[in-house]
Image (cartoon, rainbow, N blue to C red; front, side, top):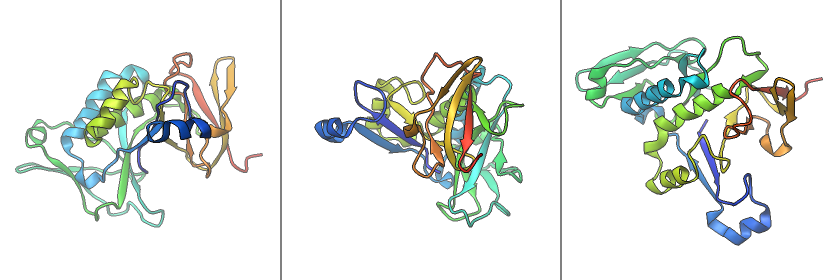
Length: 241
């Protein structure tokens, strides 16, 4: 799945109403599909993600960083897929778990050689994303700090693939993961009917517009400091009684 950032260049947060969108025309929203094919992502970019994880680890102190490899087409499988860090002199196999996750190792030689990440599959066959999960979070929920840290890692890896204009714009708005004007699209484990934010006694049901039309995508308030990192995003799955 592509990592999509919706930057709403309006004074109010969220998506601009139709009449306002008409007034501001092309400058109200900029969509950045920042993810390139994993075959063309450099090792240096992934190391930037590792650095971001270390720097922001307090967002999810009990979690480890892994990455998730997903087929672009539901009919494809990760069976037989291999990942390799390849440089002029370096060749390092990266173990891929049965669930599609992998840990990116640090290697100074690969970094010095500006190595590439190579898959034994054709271009565009797979997509990746960070995978940060604090232990013991219920299966029907995500921890907000985990999602915040995934965003920080994703942006660190992808930022150089974004145009200078869009990168500057996102920075001006406060950053990819800390602005109410940047909406980071999350992938649901299965189709959602809705979700609610929970932190202690505080419980707030998300507005309908926070869920994508097919229920497979959703947006959470990563920027909202009134929600602590330990807040949970509790899912209501479609068809759930």
